[in-house]
Amino acid sequence: MKKYIRVVGAVIVNEKDEILCAQRPEGKNLALMWEFPGGKIEAGEAPAEALKRELMEEMECEIEVGERITTTVHDYDFGTVELTTYYAKQLSGEIQLLEHIDMKWLARRDIEALDWAPADIPAIEMIKNGSPAK
Image (cartoon, rainbow, N blue to C red; front, side, top):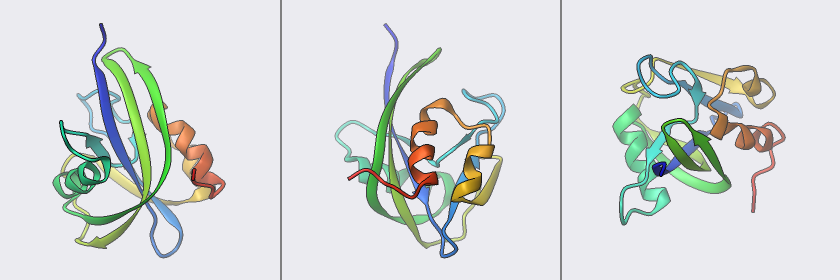
């Protein structure tokens, strides 16, 4: 049986309405693909708490978690990933790439041009149109 992994991703929007996109490192699952920063939800942890913790660990960035965008489930060879994405606002901290090898701030209309991890793609469609789920 495949491992079921619950993860969260932050769609961080800056003052220019650009979206933060992060590139995964070589040597890990989904190497060099782009994703919304975030990570695994620990046992007993609320999704918003996990997202704040992961952004602090991966980017030394404090965020405010906003509206949920969507939840998608995708089967990979290493397991089944349930990804819930949330809009987020950067509160403090200069973003440090501790887990990723690159990052870009892109306009909503341009984000789909990157090679995204498959689980992130449904959220991209919603973000591109500026329409979060209620």
